[in-house]
View 1 (cartoon, rainbow, N blue to C red):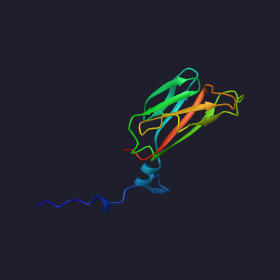
View 2 (tube, rainbow, N blue to C red; view 1 turned 120 degrees about the vertical axis):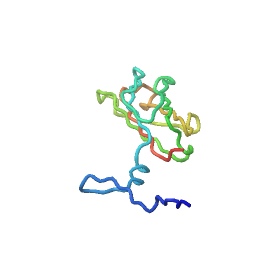
View 3 (cartoon, helix red, strand yellow; view 1 turned 135 degrees about the vertical axis):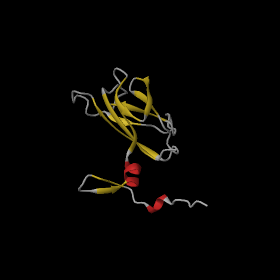
View 4 (cartoon, one colour; view 1 turned 90 degrees about the vertical axis):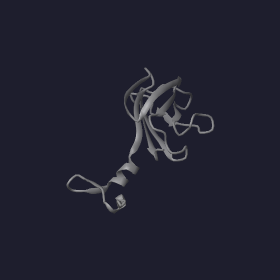
Amino acid sequence: MGRALNLSQFQHNVTDGTTTVGTNYVVNGSAKAWVAYDQGVNAIKSSFGISSQVDDATGRTTSNFTSSFSSVDNYCVVGSIFDGSWANDTRIFNHDVNNDTYTASAVKYYCWDGSGLNDAHRFFVSFLGDLA
């Protein structure tokens, strides 16, 4: 009769020759999805774990994930904005959980400049958390 192999007995590490880190730490601490997006022309510049971007309206975008998160409470959204000219330093990345899409498989966010919504030419967003 065969014996079950207990994989927890093995230590898995990633090393660069100087520093060693456990693979669980790397997997759990890494972004599960990210996107570099131009709202002005509705174009994904680069992405990982994003199945599609939806241009909902001026300044409003929805990211749809390739793999869903385990629940809506098990991920966070981190974003930054750059317009290319430094003219709009007051722009902020925002999300309203009460009025916007916020599910385990998609999230809506927007660009606000203090007086209204506008398209950001460089929108960088990361999604961190536990996948389903």
